[in-house]
Image (cartoon, rainbow, N blue to C red; front, side, top):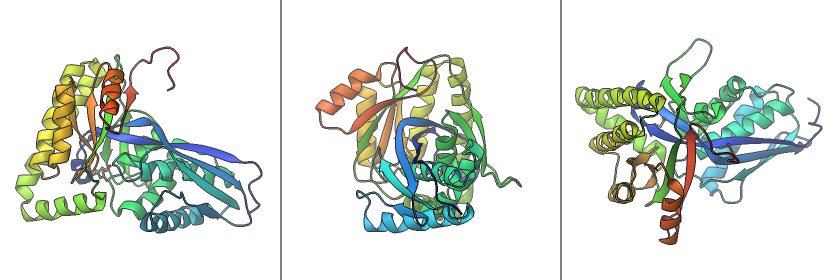
Length: 316
Ligand code: MEV
């Protein structure tokens, strides 16, 4: 393999799950959308195929990143490129940083190997990395990041090697969320593992709850496509109640959910893994004043538009 000739730059978007986290692992649908921030990967010619890990990562994260990188690099013939990562979003906050990292890295590796970084090829390679990070992920995170669209996703094992089926959800109205961080984050592996133990012990009870989340997701997809933000917000609120019933919420997450609702959110819930803390989303038709107020109060937060028409001059 010859060294990569030109510097390569690629972006992997972070993600939020609007509805359906956790039950998506068991084959039920979820809705997820890309964030405008994520991870930037840069590749420069090098004597070997090597990853320069971000300084902000802790020792365990660095070890995992190197292992995941080696797995993906082997699959594209270890092109001679040094990949540097610049995370724009907090690592391990439930915002899909590992998927964003996997997608950005895969795009650089594919280009360095002389292959086109199509969403399909990118997702295939990123999936290999995601398995190192998460064990048995549903695939919703890296698919959302690679597609960069609001999607209705369902996990399936396709003969093509695809991990799931994704369909774009278009909205006639802007679907915008405020993302706020609360409490101390629990690792995804822990919350997914603890839920797996509970559902193995009481399978019928948990199946019923997953089924209810699945039906909410179907309703919410229709609401998105009809531009019915009130209907979407209500589905998000009910989903939060079910996530709590599944044993996945905590006082820090609930406090932020109620805070966003008291600030006028049409719907609010945690997004991603849940547990002791992490990210909470609120659906707002005007998110900017909410971000300004929360920021003044010391809350780490930002706004992101996930779908729908954009105001002129907006960065997609
Ligand atoms: C994590 O972002 C979402 C979970 O549903 C896990 C997964 O889908 O693999 C909690």
